Length: 152
Image (cartoon, rainbow, N blue to C red; front, side):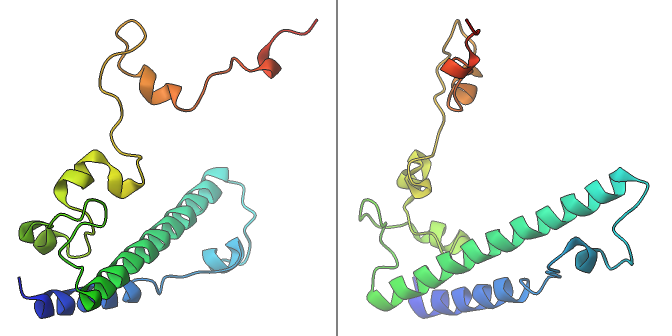
């Protein structure tokens, strides 16, 4: 794998990500909405604008996260660590780096969820009388706390 070609790809990706960050970032809803009044008789209009503003903020946060990952990949190229997994130290497949040039983990570590800080796969075995959805919801806790007990 030619590291200079990958470096150039990463620089182009970084430029693309930074160019998309120029979205409208009004500080208030009135600035964002471009209307004279944010008061309206239609609450759904306000909800739509609020949803769009939240979506834009999430997309900007994702772009910032990807830009950080690209910058980390560029620094790994400079240090000579680009083709090696940050978790296990194994070699990252060239096909993976072609598909995702800012990948920092090998496919095995990514499959185990280690690239997400250990928040990878959910348990797949059925728990609680064969209910496969219980592990997904149980991680948020239940309402069995002391505040939920009947008063005396």
